[in-house]
Image (cartoon, rainbow, N blue to C red; front, side):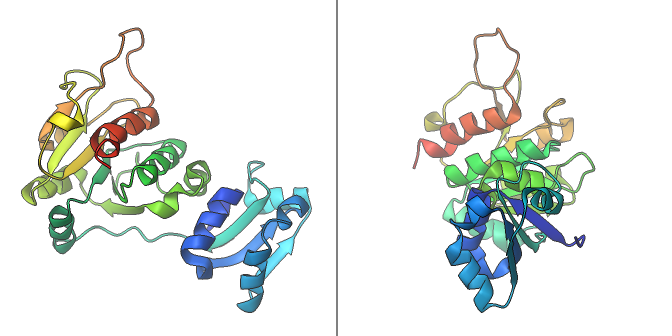
Length: 247
């Protein structure tokens, strides 16, 4: 497998890619049971003279590199992560496009789960930093997202705090999610501006630089029995509060 290729596993994930960009699938492998469900995909690949094969479970596991392949593996080009430009920010602000910033989310499974929730609530832009702790849209992230990665565009910027300040300058209300100390206010009372929601690292939360770059901080109120939610769960709650309620 080439370094610039990605293996997408699971029927929901592969179907979502096929629906969005069928031509991006370079090769397709599946087991016998799944093969009965992907006739249209096989026909499309045959027309494009691309490889598609029904293989034994052991070979499929080897191709996927995991036992969690869901009966099918599609090989595609790895995504190119580009930074938004000034024109993009201006356009997002004008259209009140919701944006999600992830401050060093390190677990690929969390990234995938967050992408799934973002896609569900119509948040199509996720921005991550060029930081060694920040998870990238890997095969694991795609698998957990179950098609959600196809509903979002992941951007990558050199410094997330600097980017957040650029969003604020463009007219966004940059809202940081804090484990404690933020205001427990609902989205309905929040802001007339377009919102950029920021989530912090699983262990350390928002960095001091990122907190300072936010317009304000909010905290999900709980019973106090547990200190905090998993970041992907917190993401779903806040995405609903800020974007789901208004849809």
